[in-house]
Image (cartoon, rainbow, N blue to C red; front, top):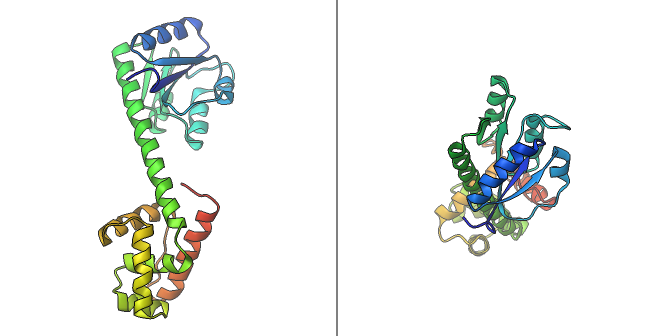
Amino acid sequence: MQPLETIVYVVNADPVEVMELTRFLISSGILVITFNSAAEYIASKKDDRIACLILDLNLPDTNGLEVQTRLAENGGPPIIFVTEQADILSGVCAMKNGAIDFITTPVDYGRLITAVRIAFAQDRKRRRERVERLSLLKRWNSLTPREAEVFRCTVAGLLNKQGAAELGIAQNTYQVHRGRVMRKMQADSLADLVRMSTRLELIFPIAWDKGSRSGALRNTVEGWTNRSAIGLTG
């Protein structure tokens, strides 16, 4: 990995520890930016490089676990804890909350570089999934309300005749809308469309009332459309 592709942020108030971490990471071809406090890191401007955060548990202004929680809520980079003073409970909490590793000093640098590489891979995957999700939502938002209804009927397994009856429109009209749905969603097959529906359902939970399919369908489409309109991306 080249320095321009990746970056490690180090938040640690111990100048000796920071110097050792920085020296090691730079020797591994990784750009490093250091901060003395959580507030300094949070207020800093970040670029769009693949990143991870090496975080001390005990900071001058807060606890590292609190920083981890706050960053998780805001989509922060993967975190590796490197700390001198730690207890088992803190380590367990950090790992349960998604930390890549919890390393105590003296640092095992072989373990650290492995954790950094895992963090970079995780961040890269997360960014790719975010781009794919935004692309899917953009395509979903391009559908008209009627096309959204046809989309839902189609992925529910209704035939053209059944979907048309469900929506109270002519079968030919339904087929035209279905063709537009396939084009706008960039689906090559019904299986593609179903997979997209599954991913959308993870963003917009759907309740399907078999006893009142039209009402449930209308509520589903309205819910999807309204939540998309306010920019919800999960």
